[in-house]
Image 1 (cartoon, rainbow, N blue to C red):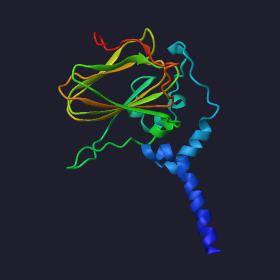
Image 2: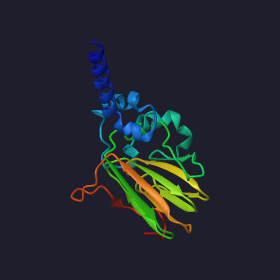
Image 3: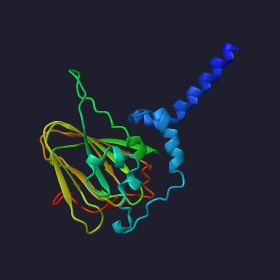
Image 4: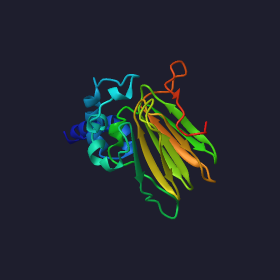
Length: 212
């Protein structure tokens, strides 16, 4: 009887780990959150490629818990920037995604990792269908440029020194990362849609002036 109970408990724990895989990678109480939030997001309407005025103005409806827990990091309706602390030690830096980012991307399916050399830029485009999180680890100066849709004001935020930054980007917001320093930037992009060369979802709209 005891053996049967142990087996049953082990099966339930394994099922919980399968459901919470994405959340466990990105921090937070994933075992509790990930499956429930995945169920809650089913049937949610997908943002279509349309005028930014058609996007929700209630940030809590767009970002869920992010609108409450990370309200201080809000920079516009379609872009959010949050500085994350370096909790590393003598071995090097360590940056943990704050609780709530796994709810912004409950269906993470694509991760790509790149570097940006001094004087170079990545981005200058927007996505019509998918959401994206950018993680930037830096050791020198760099800038992030973005807008809130076609015809809106281009904004810029400059970072100096060393640290880590997380940027959540909604569909229709064009964005770009420019390395104005002398050391390479580390950039990781997380998305809720796979890259499909037959159905691209990156459309050019430069926001970094004079930089391609």
